[in-house]
Structure formats: C-alpha cells, structure tokens
Length: 351
Ligand SMILES: [Zn+2]
Image 1 (cartoon, rainbow, N blue to C red):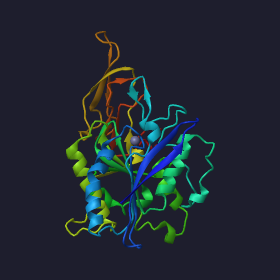
Image 2: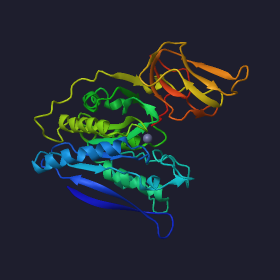
Image 3: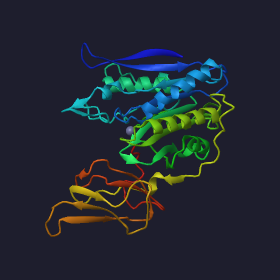
Image 4: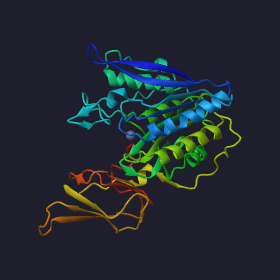
C-alpha cells in the first residue's frame, strides 16, 4: 500500500489543503479497479469510519497477494469542508466562501477523458478539489462515494443505466433501499462519475462491470464501531463479488431483496409552518395514505398553534431531519412512495 498526499492550492497565499490517498496495486491488469471516497460532505462520517475498519482487511489481502484490481482510497475527500467551522459549528456541506454544495458543480464530461476537464487554475479551491477527485476516480470500474443522510436507512443512489446490473452490489453493501435516478443537471460527484459513460462505445462504457453509487450510510449520528465493522464487511463483499479482491472465505453477494424506488416516487414533504417538529414516524416505518407523519408546533399553547402533516400516498419513511426546528418550506422527511409523487420537485438528486 502506498500513501501519497494530495495538495490543493487555497485561494490566498499561505493556504494549502491536503488529503491522503492510499493505493493498493492489483496483480491482474484485467481485473476491475475500485475507487472509494468518504466525507465529500465533510461532516458525514459513517463512511470514514467504515474505511478505517476496512483498511486492515485490504492490508491482509495485499500481503497474501489477493488484490487483483488496483484500489484507490480517499478517506477524507474534502479538506476544505473538514476545516470549516462557523461560530463553533462544523459546516461540511457547503463551501462557506461560495455557498456551493461540495457535492454539486462537478464537471459533467462528455466522455471519460480527464483531458476534457475545465481549466480551474483560477477557479477557486473547491473547483480545483473537484477536478482532482474526478482525475483520481474517473478511470476506475467501481466508484463508491460514501455519504450519510440526516437520519435514515442505509440506501444507495444508482443511475438507471446501471440497474439491475448493480443489484449484487446493493446486496453486498446490505442496503435497505435503492433510489434510481436518471438526470443530473447539478453536477454531483456521482453524476460526474457516470454521465461521461452514457454516450461512448460499449467497449469503453463497460456497463457489465461498471459500478457507480452514492452510498447513504444512514444518519449523521450513526458513527459507531459495530456499524463501521459491518459496513466495512459489506464493502469488502462488494469488492470480492466484483473480482477486485480474491477471498474464497467470502460468499459472493446474490440478489437484492430491499426496496427499489424511482427518484420520482419520493415525496420530500415540505413543512407548512415554521416551528418544532413532533414526528409520528421514523425511518423504516411503513405508512398508508392519510397517516399523520408529523405535527408542527408553531404557536405553542395557542388555539390553532399546531399543524399536522399527513402522508400524501402510501410508502415507507426513508429519512427524516435530525434537528427538530424547521422553517416553512423546508423538508420534513423523505417518503418513498408506492407511486409517482405529485410534488413538482420530485426527481431531484438530494444526496
Ligand atoms: Zn452527503
């Protein structure tokens, strides 16, 4: 295993950001290669600790000559967000200088060729970071971007062109649900990792072995040793199932038995009022149309001071907020519906 330090120039003299990259060389040039990154949203740590738990397994496989395809690991993908604190609170989702989401505005290339990347020498540190992450990841057959939600189930975003071919990966990871999406106009890292392969010859696209997903490892507070160990085992199983690592002691993953939900079927449930949330449901709960999901206390103790929110359709709760204060129009939860949502905003990538 080789460790190198990446350096991203900051936006003023004397500021440079650094993050480590770990590379395991493969013994078989024909084997699929893999790239794993975590904490692009810098405060989302379940993937960071899963990688920490995975590394000894990879080191053992390397020592025994069982790593077939090259593996690149970036445990802290966002040193800019990692360093951002505002009045004592960590801010890992948006660049405070530009208000840009760290998982948006990635370049969506027309083909998987890093020579097509834009010139970002004067573009700002976060754009330089995004270019570099694309350079590190793009040529790999398997690209995993490890995130988490506020509070939620373990679920994957997967582009429709890779489904159901990636069902074994969803099973390996042990996801509760898969959310299928088709369009990305905002430039997520996942979009930047799959869109370049949409209009190239099949011999380049290699959809038979391509894996691209945003892994949502439950919620922000699900940073825990036992979950990290089981998530690491899931990542290992995926790498074995797809032939990156050889390990006869691991059973390859089979069919995915969790829920598969088109992005258009997700209701985001904007809060009608600002106030304190009393939830009736938690992630994983099954709801019927008309069930109460939450009550917003906007005028405590006053007549009419409570507003109830009901399920617009039947389905299950995928995620909910971790904080209980909300403004009008902010989303209360993600309801994975049994049919298409009537909310005009549905279909937007929300990782
Ligand atoms: Zn995220």
